[in-house]
Length: 430
Image 1 (cartoon, rainbow, N blue to C red):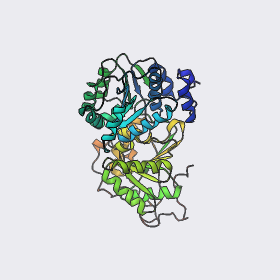
Image 2: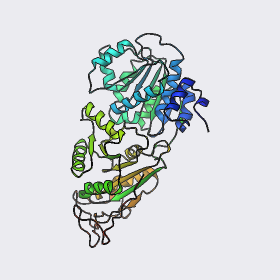
Image 3: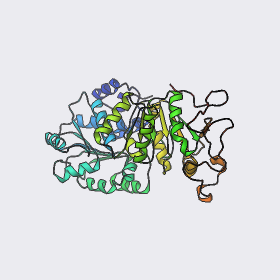
């Protein structure tokens, strides 16, 4: 088993990593750190939660700390990320790992004043972490000098594509020097990302930790079949009855995130929503409370949650399944990080059977089902033809034709216990 010194990292970085409580590199760190230290381009396929930030940050810091900054205002390493939250996470990792160096970093993103960012860039920074829009704004004002970039990192390239940033990325590349090291990290590789990688990378070292479409084995995945109109009550009961805390709940829309967070709070479950329409201060505050364990539930859309990085996050709930199967893997990857156990639950109604079938095809297996007495069970997806061969499954909130309520049990919103008064729900977690 390797350790951080064996990867070729200098003592000041090994000491910082140990201060953070890490002694053994993750697989992606074992593979990526040595080749980044050599100065090679890297094409890395890695799911979230694999330790990829340290996989590129540590060797970049090692290379930068070995030589002085050539020009006062020149940025030496540029890390481009899709979201504000992820950018802030990477900058926080820099502070942890660079504590014994004299290197400086700056994170820039929209939603906050640009003037303090311009002022700090004038003083000079070694590492710049940026979202595409704000970086181009700064470049347009000639407030950032990228001509000295030695290493360029494109993080979560597939999410960049999802968010429509490919054109912005190409504009950023035109601002960089021709001679530089390039590192591209992505969980999936749609054709546009493959094309971009071919244009960006020169003879890259290929690093692959988990195939696209796989999920960490330490994540327990379960599906509850439920009438759409009862999802809110079911989620509330699962959280309360099992004593869940730090629950990350995924929905598809910003409006749906606001509505569910309000409903949960009114039901006695403290919850906040995080999405693109929230102010930066509101998003930062919600994330801080959630990470500190003072907020029980965070309701998020896919894009907003991409920057959430919490060690040992115990619970992820797919309140609504994503339209794209790969996004399910990204969602549940928020838990089960760095070898820790985690639970992922999906509340699936009849109108989502098509998405569930696509997710199971991607995973290559069926996800375990569970039921909660008293909640209307929808049709069994295993008995339904693929989506293109079946008809409409009914109105939103209406049970399918085979839906049934166990005898003697009340509908959602009333008493949902069985005749013995005991609820059958997932076992309590730690």
